[in-house]
Image (tube, rainbow, N blue to C red; front, top):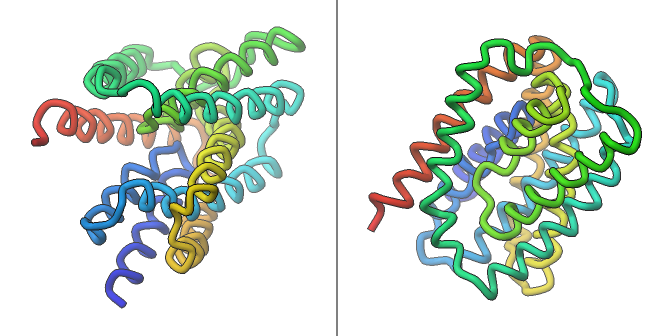
Length: 254
């Protein structure tokens, strides 16, 4: 009973954070590993995806009702992200991600410092491109970050948000809304792989999914109410936490 309650609460909080700016896995994955230390890692990752994909999809729907979504760019980008995630998942079976694991904290630190240095970054929504160029650039972002999600994973939502802000000129609110669609695609790709291999606990995942949707609903409402400045602040907090977590995992963990 304790296990159900703990991971359900963790899933709700993860959905809340993930709906605002991504990074829900930073909460839910450690919670699953802490409660089930003897379980196969693939099963815990699959259970995480089985819960998280619903909250992310729900957040996408909520944002789409209130925020301008450039579907002509985002739908090709989502397809590219799905393909990239599948390719990344296959690649990790061939190549060790150890080098990326050590580089990730430094990459995240560079993202954080750049965001802090550019005080105006992501505060105004001013799309830099349109038509085919925007669709092509969004698809490249989807493919690259999707590949990263399939290959390694931590911080995927934050990378989507940052690149939509920096490359396409979105503000943090529109970038977060757009990132949810792409993140849903990458989650679906990973989930399909885990299901095909039998690596998911449905009795946990389904209950956690309900909590994840509830957290997602609350997080989306807060983001829509308070706007780009609020999302930027949460982005900085989540990236900072990711730097600490990935840095510890890469250099200090046994």
